[in-house]
Image (cartoon, rainbow, N blue to C red; front, top):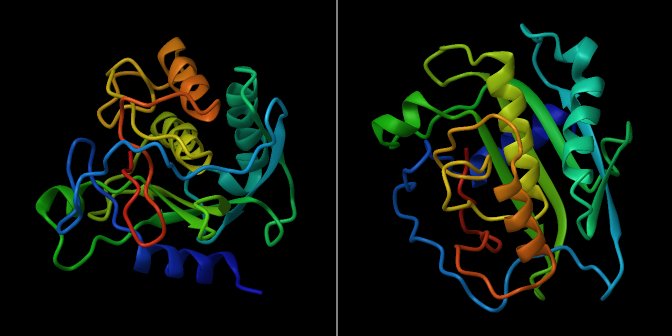
Amino acid sequence: MRSPAQLLVALTLVQACARPGMQAPGIAPLACTAERTAWAVPAGARRSLTVALAVADPSRDGWEARGEWRLREAVAAWNAMGLPLRLVPTRDFQGANIRIVIVRSLPAPTDASPGLQRYRAGVTRLDTEPSGHIVRAHVGLAEHSPLGVPYSVDEQLATLLHELGHAMGLPHASHPMALMAAQSQVTELTAVDQALATRVLRGAACDTPVVARRGETVPER
């Protein structure tokens, strides 16, 4: 079994994370297709996904003491939308469908652009089957930028909500008033996020980029 710190190392080695509105070097833009990466959900049914949170580094912002409560608040915000996916907090980190690790900072790649070096608040990697179905999601959430600039707790909580959206299989929204936008102007989920999530998770035709398959980059907040 890997520890949270080991899982995060594996995550950051595979996943490139971009500042809002920026594309990671060498990664082609994602195109909308009929086949998208998604959790398997029986038609007309609802699936529960377990979500666990661990703290890899000593937290400046109280994640050890308040992390479980913060996760429950974020989960409740997504569940209030009545989507086909329901998030369930768990303390079983190794067995969780979605694993979240809180760290001091996420390292920027040595060959990254200045934007990637300045801003790396969150990162998500999706493990998929050959069919495209997601089998596990890994999320890293940083308290500081790669240059050591602290993010406020409100920014971290917004990033948590955003990355949970990616972990459920959501792409970026094109509307700036969605928290799932690459350059969001809000810090909480909005009706635009609900419309996007309902459209994508219920399998409707899409008009925005889908999240990446194995080996590609999922756009990050």
